[in-house]
Length: 564
Image 1 (cartoon, rainbow, N blue to C red):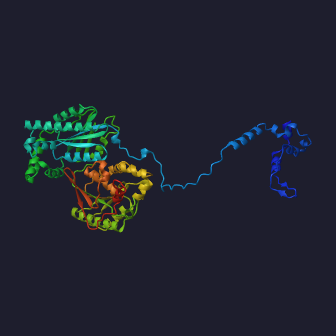
Image 2 (cartoon, rainbow, N blue to C red):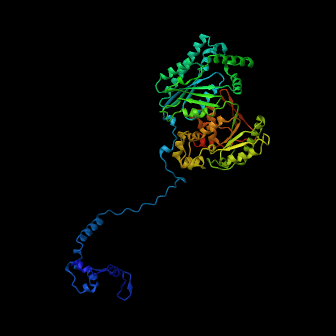
Image 3 (spheres, helix red, strand yellow):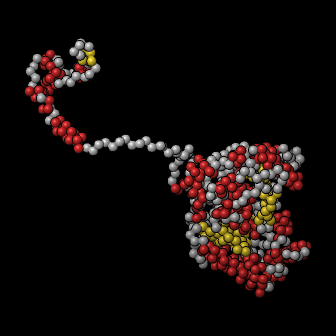
């Protein structure tokens, strides 16, 4: 029956009736809504139902909604018993957020070096006649591997001999017919090898390389070395043999050898003759490394005429997916025993330096332009002395390019010899990511957590945001560049900023990576010239060079450990 009553009520009629304006007693339409009962809706519906008597069930609307009275009683009771509503909270002043917000995982804050995670132990035993570049090559390996984060140490049998009181011995000590001297040399070589093995064991579960710098020219000596090394678990042996018959390289090496302690205070001509006699004594019994000496734990590398030819045999096993030997391969393909000078010059003061801001790509200030002109004059003088242009390497930032422009105004060579300029993004300054162009004061106040993390580990801390780097990241991107520098035959000028300069200084000086971020960087041009032991460092000052507004003092003032 209830369905029959509503069958003729359309939705449009229902809504139209509810929304129509009601007339007031005075006949004007009012805005107040009027309650509508179910009876009204049924009475004003279609004619088919209007004449019908309203069903008894519809006369009382509570019969349609039996729960209504119950709900209303509960609501009234709840409202009566509810505590008074608390006053609206006071509007708190909203904290001002840092101008640059970011979120990152803790794993993204610090760089990880694979050589600290992957374990591999290698003994590198040098082989070759004297003056074949063994000491220079072994020191270059130590410098490069430590730079890459792989602990490496050199153990020199000659130094052990000199420390034992045998310094200054003549060529007769190296005569193979001198049985006592031969026995003593073998004992010192084995003692030196014991030091190598002890070093590797002390390095724990990490990658490490120990270098035995001795002649190891006979098969018998190499057999003894192999037996001792392979007697230790998990250590790989590689013989690195340097062969040379290039007279120019040999003559240069002979001259460099006259500077070692065996010939200290001796007449140069007499010292040279004695050294050649020593080489002759070794050459009479020399036995090159052969394939049959190697197995799954032993291989060799032959370097001929300082990189003219490179031969590798059984240097890598199937398990050496992350072998440190790949670093040694790269360096051996880049080694160069020729004379050369590498000059490192910091670019001058920029507008950001003057304002105490970090990073950025601002241009040189007036003082920075004078500094660039001073570098240009110094380079021109060096070119006139060498008789050939230097190779210039720089970054791609505005201050680097402005310094190169200053160099164009000075030509120390003839007009037919052009200076080559190589622009590498690798030489750009360490990127501060989202914190770039901030002052150290703002960095500490706005980002105290970042400031503290960086203070704790300046080597591995990585700046937040796209492009943000750590010092360790800069080391990774400069590994290619240092190999390029090892290849260069002539003189080189490197233009860079402070952080990159620190990384390069750490490489050529052999400074541990942990000390690298705190190196003092002078405004002078720093030179490294090839010597028998590596590179000899010197500094050159020129009129017009000026220390920039150093942000190091600013960083120290706010409790930091050095700048950039």
